[in-house]
Amino acid sequence: MSGLVLDHLVKRYGPFTAVHDAELTIPHGRFVCLLGPSGCGKTTLLRMIAGLEAPTAGAIRLDGEDITGKPAHQRDFGMVFQSLALFPHLTVGENIAYPLRIRGKSKAEQRAEAERLLALVRLPGVADRPVSKLSGGQRQRVAIARALALSPRLFLLDEPLSALDAKLREAMQIELKQLQQRLGITTIVVTHDQREAMTMADLVVVMSAGRIHQAAPPVEVYRRPADAFVADFIGMTNLLKGDVAGPGRVTVGGGTLAVTDPTPASGAVILSVRPEDVSVRVEADAPNLLPGTVTFLRDLGATVEIRLDVAGQEVIAVTAPQDRPAVQAGDAVHVRFPAEAAVVLAS
Amino acid sequence: MMKAVPRRLRDYAPLGFPAAMLLCFFVVPFGIMIAISFYHRVQGGFYEPAFETANYERFLTAFFGGVLGFSLLLSGLVAAIAVTLAFPFTWLLVRQRRAVQVVWLVFLLSVLSLSEVIIGFAWSTLLSKTAGITNLLVALGVMDQAVSLSPSFGAVLVGMVYQAFPYTVLVLYPALSRLDPTLVEAARTLGASPLRAFFNVIVPGLRNTIVATLIMVFVFALGSYLLPQLLGRPQQWTLSVLITDQAIYQSNMPFASAMAVFLVLVSLGLVGLSLLAGRRENAQ
View 1 (cartoon, one colour):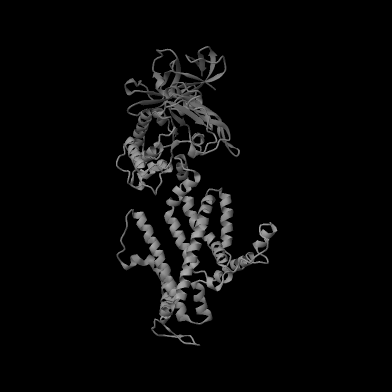
View 2 (view 1 turned 90 degrees about the vertical axis):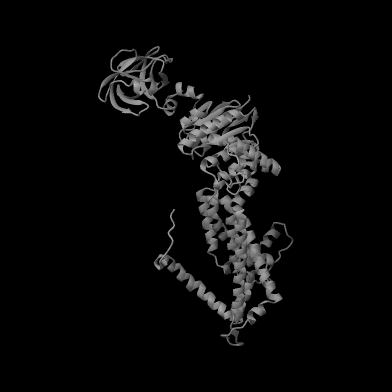
């Protein structure tokens, strides 16, 4: 099996289990985001891949070779730390050339590689500066350049952009993705920001409480969430409690909705419908409607957000200003949930 | 941040207390000592005011030069050994759990509370022929017969390193515990073995702390005058021992003062030189 394989990986700290039975296969050249709330075990998983933590059970294989017990310094992986961990006593160039120095390369080779990598991260001409003289964004680039020295087999990043301000972070996300596409290097990024994951990843791995909930391309994670946690964590969604009334039919409150997603034979289910798919109508002039009451409405300029009470459950609808229905708080309305937009999840 | 420049006398008021303390307990006694170092010694009596350089001239002989050299060498050696041992020890200590760290720190503080006299006698017993550790080695079959390891240069060195070690750890502890542990991890992912990461990242990253600690232990060891007497032969006596001998047993205050002033000047000079060297390297 080529690529990185995590085989039933477990990490326990005393009675606390940080990672439960993680199974994942990452083919070569993919950009993977480990996504989840803080404390979900994503950083522990990355550190096990890097060799900085020893798994309690399970195995890590890279291109068929078992690397579970291999020390971190023999793995040839590049890693960017949340704190960046740039060596304060070395210049920018010396930081980047550190892996070459370790391997006994000549000064000239070290210098040339540092210059090449600085050009790669678009930060030329700073090789002789001390690290302390750089801005946050520049340090970020230096940390990335250092991790990419000597073309590592895996490129690992632990919340790499969390120290940057929002604008710079967006720009770096795009740049990081372009860099990865150019180099074709297998990359694993830990993040708690779902926008960041959607921007960069080919494969999003959603985790919570030490478990992997879903590993799929970003659009699939958004459109076809595996469970209620994923649906709720990735963007905004409405989770409607209902019961299966028959094949493709779910009752919510007093009404019945048709859904195209396969339903179980019977029992309680949760319907996940994205706010942008929900529409509010004054007249009952379309199929798949439920009665509801407007509780709150706000115009955010680019979008209009309508909060509704549908059979005792809160529903949020988002529309473009030009499609805004003529309603206000307190109005009784009809709320449309398109059959193809609803995802049926286990309750 | 705005920095206000003090203008009136009142603005300097906060400095008053420390300045008064420094004046009372350092400048005045040191001034008196400098003055006495030029006084004339009265044989069989004490001393009388005068201005003569005889005390310093007497000092500039091969004998006292040798003792001064030995004192500086011994203190330097103690500082080097203490820091070499304490630095990896502290590095391992700060990575332990909190509870383990507290136990070790309490232990080190209790060693600090021992007086120099107790440490001296304890080591002279431990290094003796009758009750010393060589008996343990004989029992284990490593040695044929027990020997006396004290008094000797090694015994003085061991005693002084033992005394300086807790200070060294406590001075290094804050800097090492503040050091970002991911620096070592970064070095490891870049291909450095743990030992190599320690020498490439931790040691140079804390160079200034190490230099400051070396100076502190050096000055601390320079003032030690009991351990060389308890654990060493007369040829291992330091300048501090001779100063004590002159001041207390020979009642030669002017000569003792002259030696003390000289010792202070030499150690200040050495400290200044090492700070200067450190600054020059930093400026590069």
